[in-house]
Image: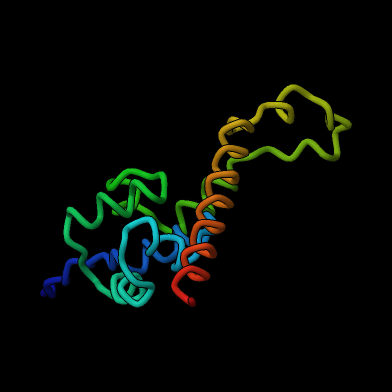
Length: 131
């Protein structure tokens, strides 16, 4: 006799939280980008389901597709990193496989600069509102 298995429901909020953490993005930053409070982000991350429109906005800020959020798994990350070959013992430290950059350094600098600007703008707003 087979017992019906309950379909495993994905917890979108936890996936958003984990992706945000991996990318080094704070709840405050995500909240500011979405125009909501940090508490709202906390509630979203505790929610099993998230509205599609909200999910699209979050995906945009995180720099990932909605499908990427929905299909995210810790196991997938482990498997991804386990596919890299370790050439450290073969004397191939400077082999061509180690010189390929998986991201554009200029994009990372621009991203960092934009985050710094956003942070400074937040500080200015707080100082203006303090008076």
